[in-house]
Image 1: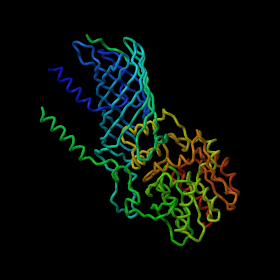
Image 2: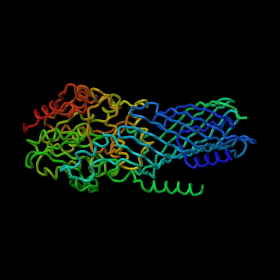
Image 3: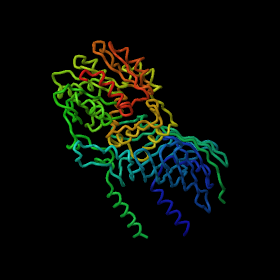
Image 4: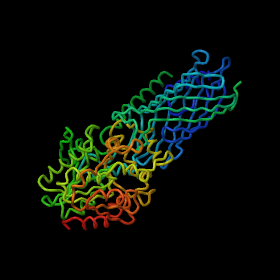
Length: 243
Length: 329
């Protein structure tokens, strides 16, 4: 009963998804792993992930529950983090051709000169490719979707609305705070992932191109931090072997 | 259990449908003149499009007309002090260039160097159709003032350039590294990059909102005397998309800067005043080395302990030397 409840909760959470989660813990089936790494999207971040395998009595488990935390490596402004939770599954198609499928929900907090933001969204990741005894190499595809954002504008952002009207009379006197939806929030990533794994540890690298669809067709504007790439380098370590 | 799930999804749907779209007018950045009739505007026809321009005027109609041209990643707001300071003798006209500030946003094809010159001609036809105009331009606005003068020397009575960009792309190529320090470890750049995790750069308002932060970025620390704490610079809206297009037109350090705003300046014989701050990478030394030689009769004056935003940090000195140059004083 308890196990079924856990599975229901896990599957429920997996409907939602996340960013820069490390699913290579799945290379150590049925073994809980912890992972540390650095990633760029394109801002630099540190991430840590914990992958927990649900108890399996008979067969080897390829289904792991993942919790991650991601924090900017260098930041000037306030508190920034992403907490992610979800799950991953290593699906064997045929022999060494397998697919890592990951899905998770993300809760993000961002703070910058313009304001403070809370985001809720999800991300899916796929790594279909070769998974050998020591090496894994696979293309990486992901979709990041964050439809909800809460904004608390800073004084700086509010100042933009001051002295707007020559006679002081006008409708727009400050930006709006509160919850908003942004239904067209999408980030797509296409890259390559590779991992080297031994019994107790793995090192993995993923890098590629990132595209944020927008109506203005801007692919890159480095001045404001828009660059079309991402990458991550991680080290995973097996904490315990499940019986 | 079934009922609890139903209530959960019902609450979720009500919550989402109760939220506003982040793109709605006024949620992130102020409206533009085409979106709010309470803002003062004029209409111009440039590059085949009629657009509304946000304009402010200072001083008496009938006084000699003076145009003030703003820089990039900004609008006219921070220049109002100069305009007020000269309004006793001039009819000062300042406007947000197409796509910037409170002016109507434009498409990519509408912005070229030629169309930027045509925009000034349109404003001249409205405010000073028969007489020459005096022009003050800062940074990009200084470059544009130079370009306009090169195209139409017969229209320019007086010319003041406050730390203009290098008027030739080849010179920009030489000094680019001294004016912009790009590093993946720069904290303000990382904050800008992280903004994508909060608000998608899906359309104009989101890009404008994000671009506003660059005014406090330390990537351009070399513009200022205290690069970590740049002087306050007030704006209403940065035209993020326009900056994207302008960057394309100007070029970049990898592919090269190929523009030339100096061709034709040899036909302008009037004295030109160029101001350069003592701290700025676009300051006195740069102006002396690269821009002054392009004019027949150019003079560079140094504003001590001033950076690129000298009109706000050293207003008294700046207005004083400008008045010392302008014929009406």
